[in-house]
Amino acid sequence: MIYPEFLKEGDTIGIFAPSAGVGHKLERYTSSLEVLKKEGYLIKETASVRKNSGRSAGGKRRAQEYKELVKDEEVKMILCAAGGDFMAEMLPYTDLKCLTEHPKWIMGSSDPTNLLFPLTVKYDIATLYGFNAGYNGKNERFEKDNLRLLKGEIPVQRSFTRYREFIESIQEEKRYLHEVSWRSSKGDVRLEGRLIGGCFDVIATLIGTPYDGVKDFIERYKDDGILWYFDNFAFNSLQTYLSLLQMKSAGWFDHCR
Image 1 (cartoon, rainbow, N blue to C red):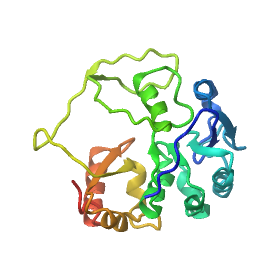
Image 2: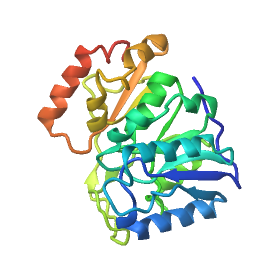
Image 3: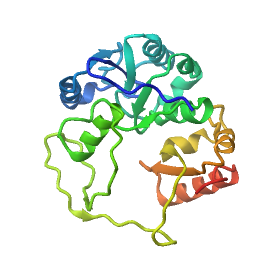
Image 4: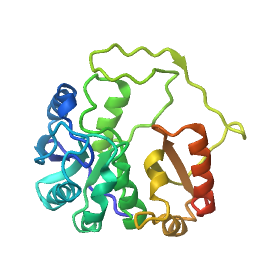
């Protein structure tokens, strides 16, 4: 597997918008950039990042902006600007293989799973399912851990004892009201393996497409074992259950730990 180089102070982070632009949340976005700059990073944006639209640009244009950053020798990491709904439109125009020639970390969450997931399962490039560019800014523990990951300082991750409901406003107070509980049918378990996954809503739409690649991936790493994680954004319980059945029927859970 290809593991890109982690970031050093003074490195440049390239930001592009594979799905929505950040024009509707510029305050949060600019606040997040200040956090990255204080960490010592330089920022290079592509042209469509600040568009106020569910599509930052046409699918072909988004693919071009991605490739610009991949081939830019100054850019040491690529950060997705935001999530959204329409990144799949970009995939037919995207040169996924070019990252094997210019390896660098790519990080994002939600709709950018359309890019991160096939890069890992089809082309053996490690990717980071983490914050989009417009998220950092409140100095929370999980934000600090995310910044450490970019430097290769892999922290031991420990569960929070409480969690909060999702909130949109960056000024809104974050109150952790709900107790965290972990459930396993087997009680306490220890698991090791290759971790793959992403936004469940996106991954379910990739089954059987040219961007799938899962069967070959899990066969390559069957001796390591496979661990799945899913970030469910909008699927209800029935959609989730039926999609899990489809994944199982497609052989995705072979060699699963």
